[in-house]
Image (cartoon, rainbow over all chains, first blue to last red; front, side, top):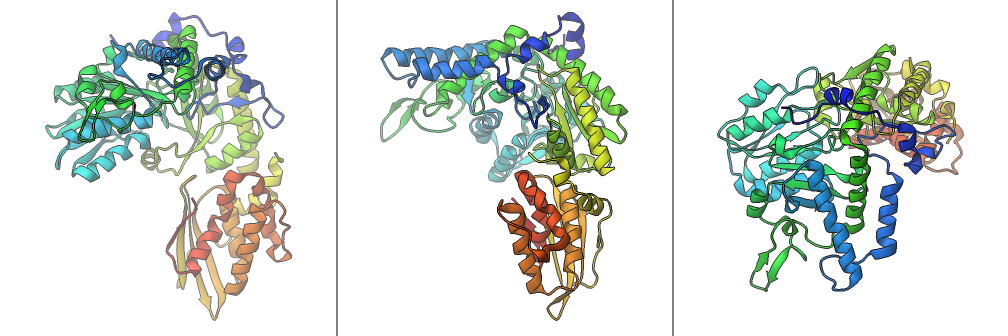
Length: 420
Length: 147
């Protein structure tokens, strides 16, 4: 059985979203942009926040805030409970086995750096290899480059096909006895490709190699099940799932977390400290030095509750319908070329329009109230692969509608009027 | 927020579609490459300076309408000017696109159509990339990056 409920499978099986009602949950969507209705299509960069998340953060600060894990007074206990309860929500969201598998971090970027430092670095030496794909975000390239520089290891890249897919045969062929770690993106932020991570993980495990999956773009656009995927580490950022920025989670196998060295030293991550030596706390506290983003974690919990109440399968189905509609509509626009045409995609469309620079597209659309991303999407190697400096990118969230797509397409007419 | 046409004026659209001096200059006495990592714009400026006067200047590269038009307008304005005059224009232009209270100096001529970018902070670097690159070329630096 497939791990990820693909949008295609989910679509027929779920009830559609009541998008109008959901849109009312997001205060920012009611604010006009340049006197026009805001059409927010930059969800792959960061999603907007529902009232429930904003209120949860507000309540945390206004009603029960104190530092966690240390005070004996009631406020601290309540804060600690609220914070720790979110571990369980993350575990449930990803179908982990144990709350201790969940480490709170600043976001997916910090999660990858944590694994690079605490798991991979002690296992890496000259001649060893780390394998990634050709569609990684900079956050899943640069930490490994830094590590390779330090240790004399080599970063190996499995290139992508013209459609923007992983070539499984190539990927398998690059796994060798020298491979010490595999780190792969679940859903490409620049292309929308949903990768066959289950097969890739199985191939890596065949060589006894642990795998990290970068889920920044997959949670909550897909239903994620780490047990079924079989991955060793999985990470995501709160701000992309309608939660606050500056908070995210790393899920890791408990046996691996237990044998890992700390990421940062400080308070909260120790059991016992003398000037001679320190004993470290068990996971996950071992990896959470210092006072964490308490209200951020609480907000993340509210975001997970919000998304789960709607249902990730329904969200995936909704976004897939939008993807199909937008792909069809954009394909009809003269001069538009979609970059990334994988067979299985999430709600991300990168495109070019004639020779018009994406930044000019972005500025014209902005004045029409349409927010898209224009640039290299922190994936410069992907841009190099297609020989373009940048693309325009529309990416969908649960509150987007076919009408949003229509506004985008109409706004592209203005781009053509000006530049073509 | 201003109107689209305040930013993308006819002169800019024209210079974007039909950039002037879009060529290499051989032989040249000065050259530099400019790069805007934010949007991936690249420009190469080559010029030959004879007796303190810019005799020939050309640019090549790939960028948005603002950066292409700005490079085109710049090369058009600078041919035949002294290096000192070019430096003075650079300063005037920089003020024009970064300071709300700046009025276009008469010396800027057509270049003043780029004044609209100051309402778009993200695009100011597009407009100034060619000028920073020129500055680097005259200072005999090979590369400049507008970060």
